[in-house]
Amino acid sequence: MKQNILISGTGGQGIVAAGAFLGQALFAQDLEVMFSRSYGASARGGACKSEVMVSDEVINDLQFEDTDVLMCLSLPAFKKYLPIAKPGSLVIVDSHVYERVGKVRDDIEIVRIPARDIAVGLGNQIVANMVMLGNLAKHNEVVSLDLLKEAVMTHMRDSMRVININALESGFNF
Image (cartoon, rainbow, N blue to C red; front, top):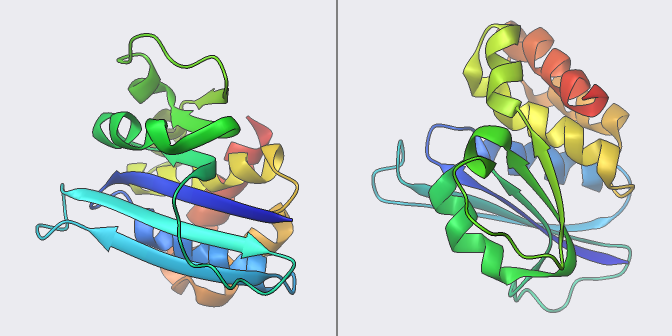
């Protein structure tokens, strides 16, 4: 098993944090994990992505050319990264983004989730990234909701733990 997971959006949406928590949860399952991130010079508001490679074997090739899973929290990210989604890929996209898109490929599985609305309902739109991760755990057997929650409990500052755990659960249960 090997998967390339790309989390994308704009700076300030917690894209890098989501990739880091995902990587920690996957690593806790004794899987091989490679995590990288990229963001524009003006981090808040600029293009941003996290790349997570996961495998049950040693990862020798670090080329991240196409995705098995694509998560998008912004329209520019959706337009930019959709072309690298392999046929059959899982694409999880915020509903606000999807409603502004024209025709979408029919060779991928699209899951629309109102991540931003759910996050606002929880009290802080910044946790939309965790709503998306929780939904990923629902649709992809590679990542476990319990291990995502464990990563948050271990690595998140105290004041943000409860809302992030609630966001993971809300995304999973959507």
